Image (cartoon, rainbow, N blue to C red; front, top):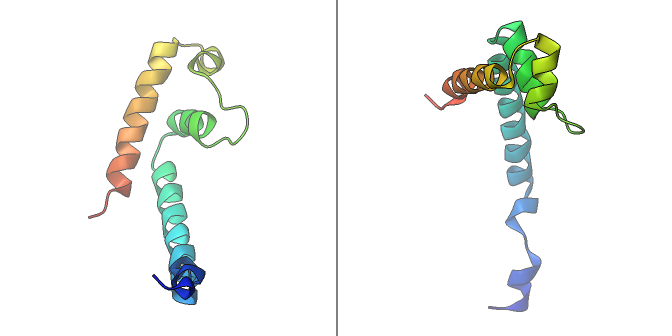
Length: 91
């Protein structure tokens, strides 16, 4: 392969950059829509467990907050994730 082939990076092409930005926007809108479809408790659990960059909540943290068992928090989390996955899956 010629040395010039190593200098070009298709990811830096304007069309690829625009596609990447648009894909990010679509995914963010999809996530917002999926979160909005959840009840308040489920949304709080998902946001606290998965969408915090720093110090995500544990099952036990949320169990104490909602005054239920950690197992119940896990069950609510699983159901919420399944609902969101269904909404985010391509048609």
